[in-house]
Length: 150
Image 1 (tube, rainbow, N blue to C red):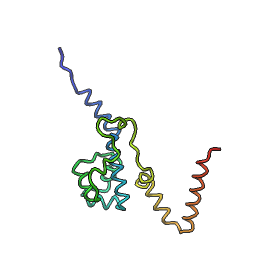
Image 2: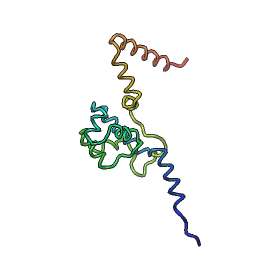
Image 3: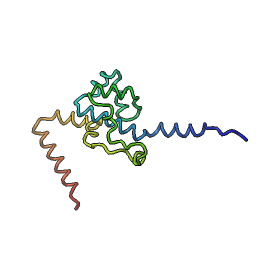
């Protein structure tokens, strides 16, 4: 009898992990971004504080790179929150829902923490106050229009 090779299984598993981040990694990354934004700390500031580049911190927040336990500890210490804060809202072991879809996150904070959100806010802040108020009113009007079915 020929021994079974585990090699094909590893190749398939490795390829899958490389493409799609695990939902838990996505959740932790989003929580890091959320706490950082709520603490009014820039990516550059937090990165310096924990001894990594801001690009590395971006990779943690976007779940392109997994965050080690020691790094989660350092991030929590730097932001003044317990490590458990980054796991809040994550289903417990044995609960369903983890693999089904990405975990819920406050969309406003997620948008603000995104590159698109930061760029939009930076550009809006550069506008004169009167123009900024008009842009805000326009966006509110568009939102109201979209919320009412015709």
